[in-house]
Image (cartoon, rainbow, N blue to C red):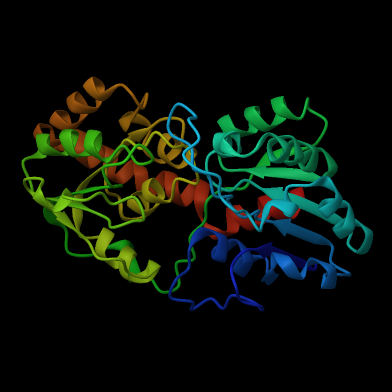
Length: 328
């Protein structure tokens, strides 16, 4: 099976198993032994059994209530057009679109690009979504006219510590900054229940003056492997992120058996941490779960052990590869 991924990333070739920045899309490419090229090179793509498209996110300047704050130039807009899909299908057997970011992201695009995106989905041979809830979304907006399946989040474990154990410290990791995208302030408020130092990532959404928040320490931007080595040192995790996407944070925690309180609409969270999954706005229940993890050592140990088992049973590399080979 000969496959290629096209995205806005600027490299050409394959992803080796020892790549230090093995994010989930790199892991997908690695396991499928797929090629990668920049999406602008699509006219040169020929003879592949499967073409996987990760369409670039388009820039927008809309407020939360869709007030236009200034038009943005979008050089990637031509890829939100079914003719682009048709051109790839002429020289390759199958063309699939992979969800990029939350399912609603395209709602902020220009109207022509929104309709172009839906028509591109209809022109494709199938859609791969992040979560079971996203599958329902894409089946709905395409009137069930194209196959839609989950492409599970994946990690390559080769560079990770053997035995999945690092030195656990009495501290808490939250999964995002204080923005609407991540909902970091809710995660921080829940994390305070543990009474430990609280750590957060540094992302594109980090806000001014986050450093002034009491008991909050920021990790610098690091590669995937350095991030994973750091994750394995925490006792607790909270990720009340309202933006439903690939769910790597919950999966990273499950790999090490770190109980993570998070959004039940994210597959990695609900599958690996079922007793710690809440409606994303149900902060009250998240607070109660945090107190129980803190005070009930048996409950903590159960959640920790169970998350490792559920990770192994549902998200290991063999499970992922077997599923994908059946689907494509």
